[in-house]
Image: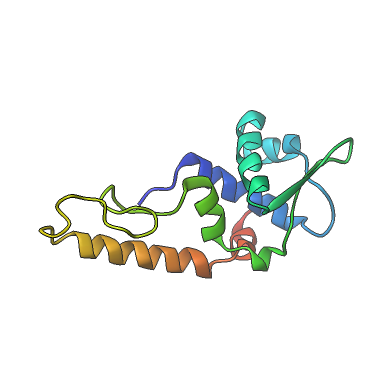
Length: 137
């Protein structure tokens, strides 16, 4: 399974917000400089995260983005789900775990893929944004 650039960048940006979540809004410019991610790409990511009520935006000189919940209350799966539409190790499985391959009744690999998907979802659900932030420099 491979995360898209959007999810990887989104997790990095959210980890940056988690460091200052109680204090202030963090500007897209600051996140862009610290993370080496283009401002335009970050805006696209933050628009999705804002629409999912994970972040809020502030306007003006002190504007930017901040988390709407404590970092401990946001799990990685929520973020990845917003940015990827879920997790799936294969084109044979939809993000919700439904088998979408016409060979599902004959294929011995499909049960393994479903198990991988379930374990991955469990790990991402058990991992909080705070866990990610603690390791993010």
